[in-house]
Length: 274
Image (cartoon, rainbow, N blue to C red; front, side):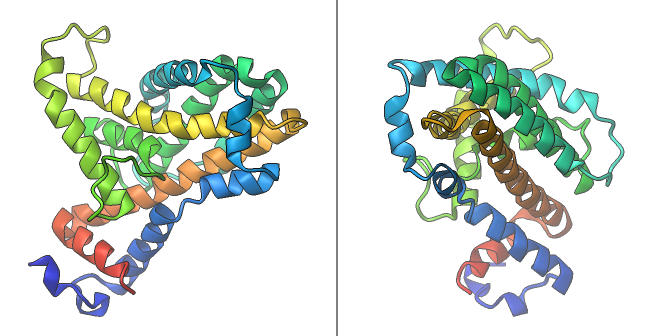
């Protein structure tokens, strides 16, 4: 059905419980507030922390981010069983990330190479568990890609489609980037023969977006006197943000399996006009 006909959510072919779930998912996905929450915690704009980072560390952060995502994708999901509908143990993952953040806060920027792979793996494990609780099969390659996509959510890039919501703009941008690079990557030698070229490209594109948020996290942790306790709090906010993104993302995917992608997108966008 044409999207222009979906002006009133009450007229849409979605039962009340599913409509409520989609509305909650949209609130999570379109109102992340990560930078604002970190700014409130440190009591200073994140830009001040960015000025305190050593010269050349932005590139270093991006390198560490790509490595962390690649390892997390391989390790975190493979260590979970595939029983659909099981809970996500989200609080346990938050505690683990807080502990690793405390270590990172103690050692400062130099500790990122140790802390980020640990916290990213914990976040990936939590994201995968949320996916499983929403009916996803962790053996499905598409689920693995969807878990990776979560790390790109919660912000916009300059190339995002301004006519879409933030969430759908990211989905469109990621799909376009993977599609455009598929032929090129198909001719390359991939170190991990189990990974499809599209997965390698997806990790690269997601890392570019995730790295921006990692840089903002590091900047918040760089604020003087924040220390280990502050690092733990920052990491707790960080994983809580991506758990929110995961919950919203996999609720949308669950409803897409039930109603179809076009119907869910139409209702999702119409809810923005409420």
